Image 1 (cartoon, rainbow, N blue to C red):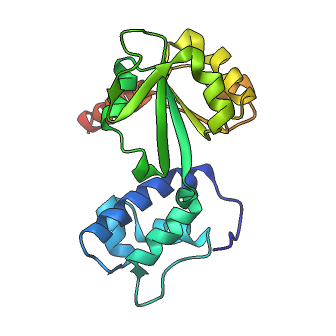
Image 2 (image 1 turned 30 degrees about the vertical axis):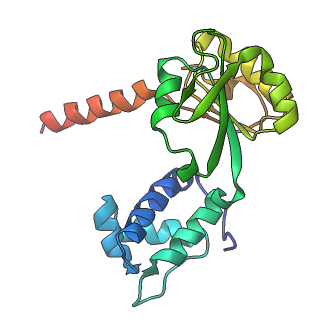
Image 3 (image 1 turned 180 degrees about the vertical axis):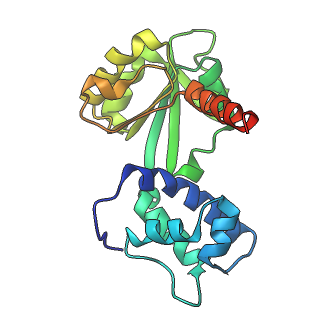
Length: 213
C-alpha cells in the first residue's frame, strides 16, 4: 500500500500494537472487524484507527470493516516482518537470559541466531534453544553471517564502543537494553532504546493523577 504522507513517529509506534491485536483476532477465528470494534478492544477511538490506517492508503471498506487476514498481511508488510531478518544478542546475564528464554523473536519478524558473552560459566550453554558463544568470536561471526540487528544487554559502560564496532561490522539496527541512549552517539543506524524505568515512571504518573481525582 502506497503511503500518502510522511508518517509520524506516533503512528509508527502504534503499528506493532495493531499487528499484535489483529494477530490475536486471527488466532481467535475472527474474519472481519470494524474500526469501532477494534477501537473498543484497544482502548482507542475508531477515528484514530481510521486516521492511522489512512496514512498507508487505508485497508477497510465502508460498511464492511477490515478483513482480518488481509489487514494482518498489510501491517506485517509495512513493519517489514516478511523480510526474515536475523539478530544476535550480546550479554547473556540475567536480562539477556530472560530475553533468550522468554521472548518470541520469530513472532516479531526476527530469527535469533545466537548470543555472545565473556563469562566462561555461561559460554557454551543454551538458553531458550539459543547457544551462547564466546565474545572474542563475535566479529568473525558478524563478517561471516551478517546479521541485521544486535540486541544489547551488556553493561552500560560498554555499550557506546560496542555499538560503534557493531555498526562498523555491518549491523543495521540496535535494540538497546543497556540504559545508555545510543541514539545520541550518531551511529547512523536505527536505534531503539528500551528504558524499563520510563514505563514504570509513566505508570507512577498515571496512578498519581488517578488518585487526585
